[in-house]
Length: 475
Ligand code: NAD
Image 1: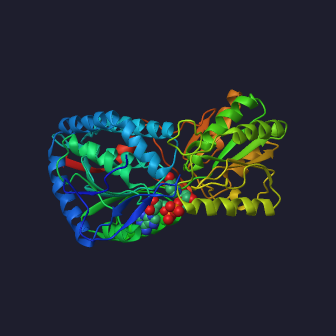
Image 2: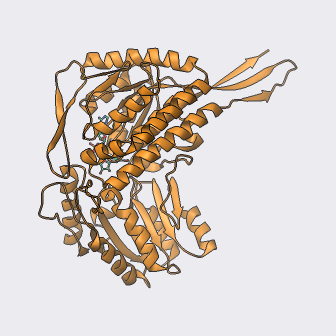
Image 3: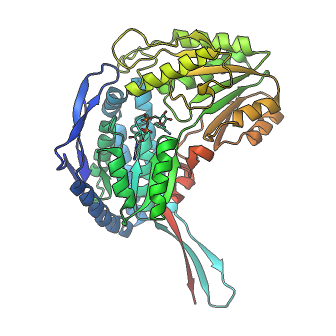
């Protein structure tokens, strides 16, 4: 049922030459699924050489021919959605329905970028002198090194692969070592679709060793990273040495503002659905709930009832509504956030502990009356914790919502049109959902500001991220 774990270097699947590796663990059972091979330095050298050869072949192809291969890759991926979703759930833990949506959405992203790569338009600017032709041309940046985390093992690699390949770049991807099988299977689909050797390479190893080698390599021209702010800052420093372009998708701490003019039961349902998706391990997960004081108790009660009723279990069991956390580190983090908030006066309405069974499970948790100084109000929880606090006025809640270092996604619920516009304008975040938590689609830019990083994936912005601008003046 699980993937055959190999790296992809120069069009060939290989276990590399280091002889080293690490086990991949099923977070629902704590059993080992397979042994993941690590790349030796010689494998990384081979991957860069292959990516250079791949880049030369790929950029020389017409945008139309590239489109045909990428579209075929999307079709193959879609046809294997059930099998790949199973691999995803086995290694990451999320429920199978969410895994399936993730794989199908990844195919949609590839489709969209396949098309958009045909529209990497330049422009002609009228010259100041007769006979002078001034052209703006978009060219692929070159070899991309991409690093992706464990929470979306198909979608996050695909955002980077699809953007890079559609622009005409080649890519060396290092997916998370904790959820490698999904990315390997995604790569297999693209390889079978006819991608030339070396255009897509997938390697694994010790993250800091691989990133320091690849980012420093003079042939690598673009770095794309999704993960924590702390690691993002380290990688940017490495990239600065070689003046390399970066896209940084880092953490978030999304406020959800619930005004007094909405139907509380239906907003609580949407909010709880968003909160417990992927057990809260989502960078745009709603994580700080601000509810107007007149509706506060009603919202807390409705939200708590939904959270307490969720069925926790192995993601492969179709009756499970929330799976385990992806790794044991998250459990320790949940315990820390909950005990810290409790000690500072928060009230646990439901959850706040692990259930007594095997696997990295943590109960869906609701924390009420959480003081501003509790760590969960300023640090990203990345788990199934929902702190809910009351607010009095528009200005006060805007200040509190904006008052953290992050700037990825923010949400607000109101039926008042003027207030909807005012809150969308006031929230200093890269993405704002008004009356909706849906801020991630293939066509729309996804990205943050402040400590949440810079650059966008998705939308035409996600293609521009892999294109250089060249100005040609021809007399
Ligand atoms: P972490 O910071 O150690 O790792 C995050 C990811 O970065 C992992 O996939 C890891 O393999 C990779 N990584 C770590 N060091 C690296 C390096 N030097 N070079 C290249 N890649 C490297 O933390 P973690 O325990 O895995 O996750 C903890 C926190 O990370 C979460 O609380 C959350 O804030 C953040 N996170 C964010 C996202 C996101 O989508 N933005 C995803 C996963 C984790």
